[in-house]
Amino acid sequence: MSKFKVGDKVRYLHDNYERDKNGPQKDYVYEVSAVREGGLYPGIHLKEFHPAQWWYGVRFELAEESKTKPHKWAKEIKAWADGAMIEVRSRYPSLREWKQWEVSETPAWLIHDEFEYRIKPEKKADVVRTHRVYINEDGGASTSSNGIANTKFTFDGETGKLKAVQLLS
Figure: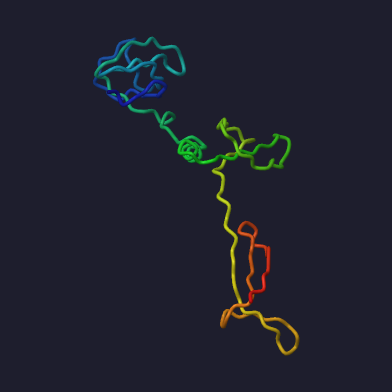
């Protein structure tokens, strides 16, 4: 099995190969058009037409520009494939404002700068704290975590803002 795949860009590596005008040229970068056991068909030279043929026993290396880097949204794509909900937002190029995040059932995975994707964040649970609240001699209120709690405070998990206060009996 070849270590190269169709579309890879390869550079000729071996200098002991007897080259003719149809053989691989040392400093050329070729795009692989087909592969088969022990050989590859490089297609044409990327900068100028160069006749191609099946080359067997010739060593190539992956050219720098072909080394794969992950898709911009690889993490999100994997999570979506595993069942996670994906949100998308967009903006017009002339505007700086992003639209609101919206759930996308079938994301297009565009790599334009006008689109962003994210794994839908799980809603943060509200935070509940209980304290003992008492009135000071000067009429002010104080709280303490010591003693029996008489008040329950509920804070929004997303914003951290106080949502509710409940007096306990």
